[in-house]
Figure: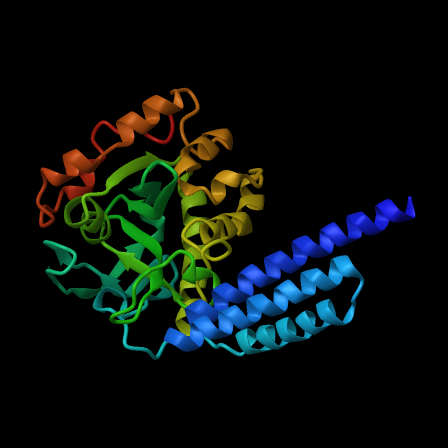
Length: 336
């Protein structure tokens, strides 16, 4: 039994060491440049290999030496600090801020760009006000850019007397900086909220990028939509005051929304179970139907089919004041 115990322990230590080595090599490759990055990653890999040899040969100094190097790397990584003060790409140059007086929400730095292509657009930043007493519900957009597995999530709040207010959680990139999902594990990018008009934030995806964008009307009551909008408001303002790292898994367009909904769900008596589809965002509609957030009396395949709005959206001008109303035509309502 004791021999089996030590074999299992060695296997567990091996898995931990391999995980630490993989993360450390990635950090060095993404955080350092050129030859220095390659040399540092190779050196760290050699230290990890020595640690593995030590685990299986009974030479404790080797894995302890790797542990010391890894702790040093963690100390370096933990010293990275997010910032709002960088040379951002234009569409993420400003963060929204929201003030409230009674039922009146005022959103500053609301984006209302007009996109012709991703590189050709008119910049518009506005301040708009919304009446919380006129909120009707909430809708969810999923824009698919990498097959059926990965989609970007937008949450849109609808009002009786004004166009929808849409939020997107995005990677805040600097000018000349490229997006990499792997780099998102290593404190490379800050997180950004975008508050926008649907003609901007949806039009970017349907018109400029040609993505497969799908709309799902949520079963949220006006009170539930109000609660969630106020949760968004609080987090938008927190981020405006204190920058935050984006993380590909823990702080992204779906996990942040999941957290925000979790903060208000108890007042709705709504169970919000953990589910892999929160991370595998392309399959989120199935999760939404499981928890009753979208219609359950319509087969999921039919909801998805009727929610595909891209072709209809591309027939519309992004200057059409009825853009939001028209893209919802034929999409099932949130309740029967």
